[in-house]
Image (cartoon, rainbow, N blue to C red; front, top):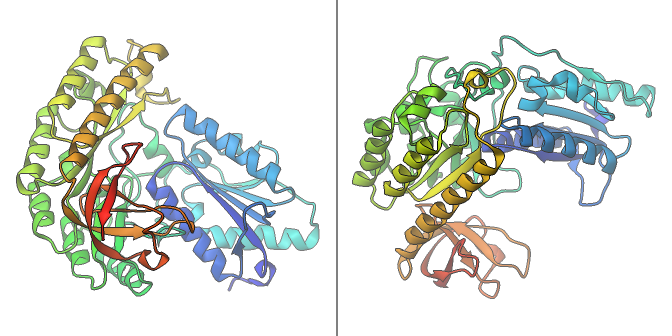
Length: 448
């Protein structure tokens, strides 16, 4: 039994870097602390506990993590500072050396965050309010713990963690070392969490994980079976699948989503490169023809589907000719948006053995070309729906500001401030879509 008395009336500040999975986990941590009597610190208020959930996908991400840790330490003098996430797992000793850090939790240990807090922070505060001994867990070679997470924090949508870890070991990636091998809870437990989200008023759930198409390694179940079970949960009107590897996006899953009750016509499919030469160097599990076939299949049964694509530029081995292959391939694909990431050298990865190195200048130029292509594709997609009716799930906004929401096929919609109403928060409303906003990032609501 954990003694919560030391936590009553205390405040906490949270900071998250990285993916939707991290945001989901941070939100769950906050929910657990709230149940112990800890409230979220107001803006400008000093927190007693700071939790930073880190990312380590690039060197820039590592740098942002260090900056965030030091900033929270500076803004909250004397606070008990907990650092977890991928950067904390991969570089525990480095994080522990940052002045002001009190506890570093790796991927196994973060599932027991509350236990570690009660064993360290509570006792230490009582002994000496100024004591800030650094405590951290060593790197874990065999990460097996699964930390459940289904929460929305201050968002409208819930994020349900259905899987963690990855078995792929792509040459450029450290995620398997940071998150461990693929693992998952049971379908029954995830259905129960979705039902709880519905009881809390949730209408949309985003399925998150590291490699969610690999769901079932732990329990012997299938991702398609999970999708079918979640589709039957009453009260949840919308599901979105955050990211799915193309080789794990089966035709059966696409066909089911097309006729399902609640799974939206929205897919996020990592490509990384449109060059077969580079895909082989990356040790990806598909070629560009398979990827193109999956896009064609989605569009055949869901013509209105929004398709987002991850692309990495400037990785080792990406010659100018390989990049041109990628550009031409993406230009011809019927996709909606490109998420472009410049390649970053990661210590310990086998990509470092590939001799051809792309300059930083070329990375920037290639990123710019793909981002411009992405803008063209997204705007063309949005413009097709001007004047049409659509159902939008609105999210709350500060009073006097425009509200935003998304259609079923993930078109961002803006409701002007003069039309905004707090009662529309978390409501699915039929609207008529108007012109693009001035920043061309959304469609305006013409009428409700």
